[in-house]
Image 1 (cartoon, rainbow, N blue to C red):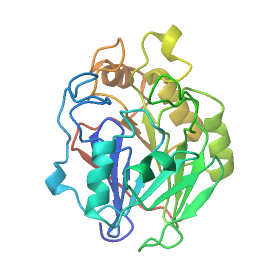
Image 2: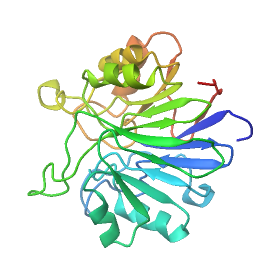
Image 3: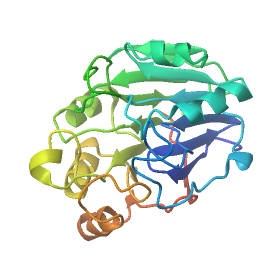
Image 4: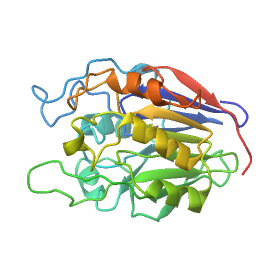
Length: 266
């Protein structure tokens, strides 16, 4: 994108392509057929990625929020690494897995740590921020690595990628520390049953509350509509969000749809 406009494309699930001034960031990329360690079992995608692999532009930075299979998809990361020129950013203690698969360069960030990204965006800085979630890829590694959200700061705007998270006071803390984001990417799916999911996943009504607490100028819904991961229907999060969302500031995109976020000097 020319100028200071940010183009945001929902690829699928929590995979979002952020493009500005020829600089491209990808969040939690997954193009695999299943969110699983197996090719023959596990949650199967119900909708295709909205951007084909062949149409994916060069990716400068890849942000990984945690190591669950629907967020850290090794086959996709291997393909990105093979293309070259991508920097991978993961939560603390998460780099070992990527390096063991020759995926890199990779940088670890603990909560509160940041990394400056070189490119056409002056002063672009990625900071790891807290989330209420957990990590595991097997039976015996629960919480062995960290999980997080990310704040992307530049002269033109503040972007907040929440990753996977339950509702909590970290939203108010993020607003207090960084200010109101121009764009927030907030998860709305995999929330039923509440007695089981509420400690780790927001429901759509809670995502609206987070949007309001952050005072985000625009929020875009993620983590819905591609994989069946919980008891609610595939399209229920979107329908519920539309029922409780205030006005048009909380946007639901279909896979492949774009939104343009104007730059607002900070």
